[in-house]
Length: 252
Image (cartoon, rainbow, N blue to C red; front, side):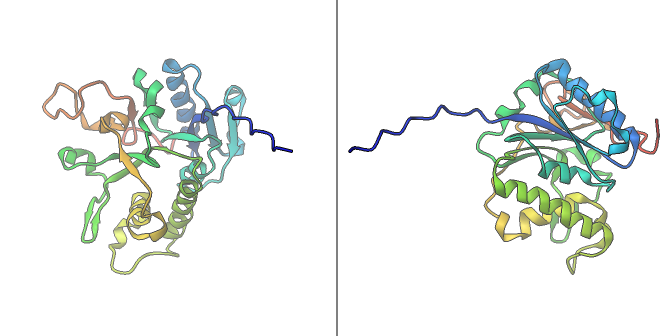
């Protein structure tokens, strides 16, 4: 008896969604809710996974697709990134706001990359003053304020989990590589740099940069304009980042 011919399976479209995390201060919780609403203004069918502390969850979370509890560490963001329920994920810092319709096609920008970041370039020195960028062994060029990534790939999820766990050790003083300036220990961007450049198992991950770079993580305080003296974008930014203006210690 001949075996039955296998039935072809329809191609399943990958699930796509946004991950937002709010921990430590309730001001981040309120800002995160505003961020999600601002995305819905341009993308009404957007899906969200919201990681926040259990004590803050209220009726404003009722229409969010996934709500998860997280701890109170300063960098719970990487924990949330590692536990995205979507196949393709766009992570955005909670102290941001969406201001352009191009957010609706952000997942098309992943292409065949494993991760896509905004790159801190030398042309925008003013954006770099709030961190130490250059050091003897390299430079912190990838900005972790936003990240588009293939969260269905096990190695990518493992990367995010390692980013979280290694930063926890780094920030507590449990881990630090010999010969690197200790002043970098406060930055999760150093942990990101280390994993990308120094950890063998991640050497083949394909990391891309947003084609219109700064539009996807525009730091508000520095006063750059598309038609101004420091022209770094040709269109209005998609994501505005209010990190330096944000009252992070405020409770509501």
